Amino acid sequence: MVHKKATRARGRPRAYDPAAALTGARDAFWNQGYAGTSLDVLSDATDMNRPSMYAAFGDKHSLYLQTLDRYIADGAAALKQNLSREHSLAEGLHRFYENAISLYLEQGGPRGCYLISTATTEAVQDPEVGKKLLGALRGLDHAIELRLSDAKAAGELDPSADPAALSMIASAVLHTISVRARAGESRAALKAIADRAIELICGNFRG
Amino acid sequence: MVHKKATRARGRPRAYDPAAALTGARDAFWNQGYAGTSLDVLSDATDMNRPSMYAAFGDKHSLYLQTLDRYIADGAAALKQNLSREHSLAEGLHRFYENAISLYLEQGGPRGCYLISTATTEAVQDPEVGKKLLGALRGLDHAIELRLSDAKAAGELDPSADPAALSMIASAVLHTISVRARAGESRAALKAIADRAIELICGNFRG
DNA sequence: TTTTTTATGTACCATTTCGCATAAAAATAC
DNA sequence: GTATTTTTATGCGAAATGGTACATAAAAAA
Image (cartoon, rainbow over all chains, first blue to last red; front, side):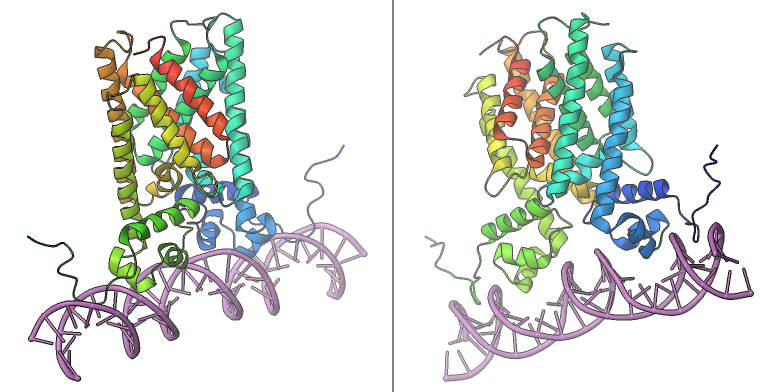
């Protein structure tokens, strides 16, 4: 039997929580963008001094890439849950958009999707960011398309429905919600957009 | 009779073209974002030295706002032309998206929509930018909705069609095309998205 | 207790960034 | 020609930025 905490790390224990630090860094980038966020701000946001940040996450660029990875992983997990076949398609899409809108408007003012709001700007000059962004966009398309194909097979969608086209629309609606949220659109307006999209995607069918 | 060039400005003539300089500045911001573009880069891009830039456009922030204004005005003019009633709705939307895709992929790598790719990031920290962005988004929605209402009245759209909902979709598709273009998606893929959207919006009707 | 290991905290450095002062240049007005 | 006006050109300077050296603190190991 091995006690997890039995063997403690050798030297001085770290004074910060790595996961919380990454969240703090992400929130700072989220508010000010990659280029607009200084190491001083990141140091405050992570509750770490500069050398510790460096030791833990590497330089600013490397830290940013790690926040992107975690956001993408978290988003994929939430997506999988929301679009599981436990709920109807309409219900799943409803949860999916509600979840997104809440995330985009969370605490301290609107901010939109982390990728669209910060990574898109950098994607042109930074191939690593561009690659992660494109991968995430395609991943979302793909996951939704799979769910729509299932729905079509299950009779939840009209037999003439085109899952590829509809999944593109569903993604586009998420993207527009992100942009509008960050621009300052109200929660009610964003919800109305989501509701209209769900109606349009699901047509007259209800699972 | 007054000759336009008869009375020349008093002092040393300017060595730059104001409109071209604004275009150069815009392109620099477009590539690197607002925060990521330094005055040195802007000075190169405008072919102006720093004091001249200041005299002509004010500080970096003021210059950026002016590039936004011009982009928004240009976009509105192009939109008006593409969605005029000279063409059918489907044809108009086709021109609209083709025009956008060409702009988003123009010269020197993909870049997306100038507003979505650069202003969105700043919108949270910079209320002036946020206001301009939100205004532009709503302006697009409104213009498309008007065109769709006309199309409905003219029998180009199904009588049951909802212009407000469809215009939101049409805008969303433009937004997704911008994000995907900047992320590196191919022109063919972007065109496919536009075509699917047009089909979906226009339904089975053709004007 | 002493050594070793790991993390912290202060302070620093080179560079970049934004913005402006100042002088020279190029035109018109007198 | 001289004065006036407007722009250009060089370059400076304060502040901010990304990144790191170095000494110290806090733990386990010997």
